[in-house]
Image 1 (tube, rainbow, N blue to C red):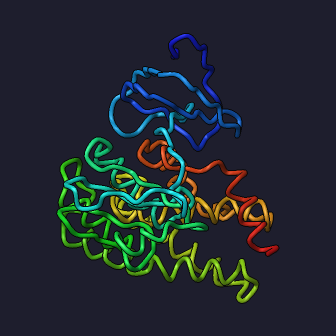
Image 2: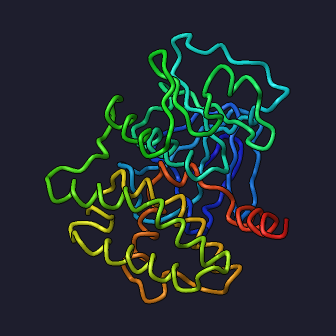
Length: 290
């Protein structure tokens, strides 16, 4: 693998994967050994890989990340015919919609607009989304919010590979798991907050059992779907935080979950949205200390 004018070594970091497509980026960031390498000039990368999943994780190319818009940013001209996905780079709810957009290869059709949640522009609430949250999708002169509703909307209303399961049995399990997603997060946070030491164990056991329902693949419904999109931003964070803060591996004794995480790390649409793991954990620690 080569970068024009730059020699790049494949890293062994297991959470990131190189896209199967050629990239021409005006500015790019590469994760290498938990460090972000900035490439200021135009970069073109080639890696011979086909399909959305790779057989092994390698160096990641991350879509050029522009600075988040804050209170000093000029307002965007909304409802001008453009389709925009408003996110925050650090928000797990927004990450759901971001993954969905990437998986369906909509980078050229849905513009990514990052918002600084700690210093949001006043115009975002006034002109874009009165709920003042992310994610939000500006499409066809309306704005759609709420992450679970939004990933279904993107999957239904845009081209690209479908993330909706076929068959009544899979549809029923998908509905059950999507309905449980918020309860899962609350249960795990209850343990992290010291309120209930057993709730996280119960929640992860539920996930382990759910991952055993279909054996034609490692994902919740066998094949990659909206259910995986809904859970991965949260399991990504909980896996790292429990290991670092509580010295506990949530995959221990849960082989289905361990395999799911391993296979998720081969999905480019997901790895392109990941944060630096060390920064994620440090941000959590600062939040707890505050």
